[in-house]
Length: 250
Image 1 (tube, rainbow, N blue to C red):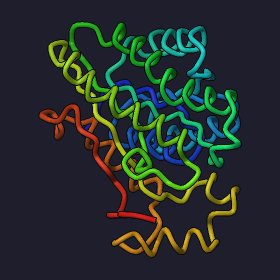
Image 2: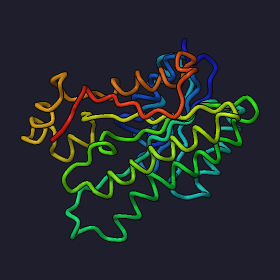
Image 3: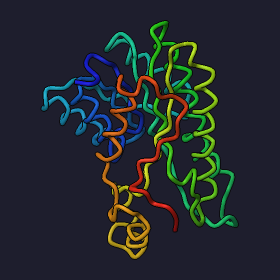
């Protein structure tokens, strides 16, 4: 039980990587706040899976890009569990567009959630961590290191998140707060299936460029998140850790 009695918030946890992180955290003993923006049904399914397994979890709606919602999310965490030990900034938006089609709206949607939302959550988490310190995991993307065709804005938002991770590791170490970025590679999720990536020629190209020869699964990322959240990683901060199967290019 690597996270026994820890309290964790996982943003964007109603599906995909976030849902898997929430479940793995709970299996390791954490009390988990399953945050969602719009899919209450999905979040409730994750909470039920956790509680059916003997774990503890609640679902809390909040758009991380809105300060009032963030305050409500962290207030609910305080009321339910009395504090916070781990924040996972997993909520994210991506849109791949040729540069000629990028609009102010698409730019701000991605940066507001991926960057500003993470900053708001970190600010709120620091208040709940208190003197004991805490742990922050920013779920970035392999696209931060290896931007893809038509992914300029999304890649930039994730590169910004990694820069925040490194800068804050220097700022927050004295407060006993560790912060790291976790960079998934190509992962099969509800999003890849609904967007048509799963089973496509593009997926075949991704797999061909992945040395371990397959698409990642959400649990591949969740297991690394457990490590970063646990005392096994007590000497690790300011890192950008790829969990990607070794993918190197497109």
